[in-house]
Image (cartoon, rainbow, N blue to C red; front, side):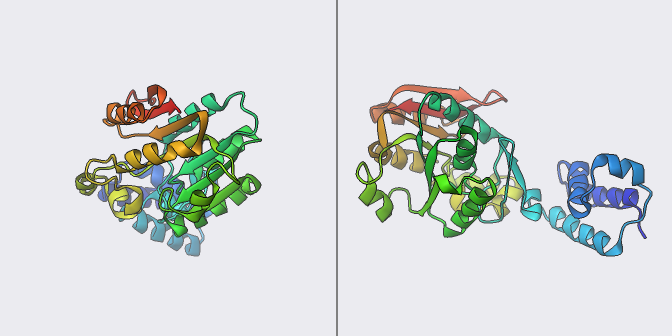
Length: 289
């Protein structure tokens, strides 16, 4: 039997050879995933042999990671705003950068009773569902063009126990009957319209990290020629779905702040601001209708 320590070293070496940036950490996380052990147990039992079936499973997952399949796609686990989300190849992996967007939304929602949230391009649902879980009385709609992404979002709504306050709609932006029939009528307009839309310029996608370029869904990345296509559509069409003084919030690429800010001002939004993330890069643009 191969010892836990030897297996971890083996996994780390394979990932290093394939230029995985955090080889040792990923090797450990996959060992933890396969065995269910924590670090304290590992250090107390690192010389112990590992069941061969589990060892083979570990090596199989190491091979997948060595092929630059994202760790989260292998384990189907991603952590965002303190919550665990199920993810697969049909959605973007939630990223810490996007927490800046959620934190800003929480700020502008303060004091609102039963706020309504519209999350456009919802993907895994991590933005909407985190807001629902952290507020307690909010309700929301998540829209996405991908039915496979919406299956993931539905699964996450159940696991976070907020499915009674979340509705997911298949829609190419605001094109579906759900939006055409309900704007300001049967369904009230929303206090918040929030979105992390596709914003990578088409020509830049081939330059992205292999994990993103080859494994994240292209639909969730491609912001067309200048990366601003979805901002233009959501800003111009989304106004109808916001209450007076309602907030529209976007995640943006690091160099898109001024462009999106101008788009919002041109469409009549006020109090338009650019917010930086923890690394000091422009990350969020928001404004009021």
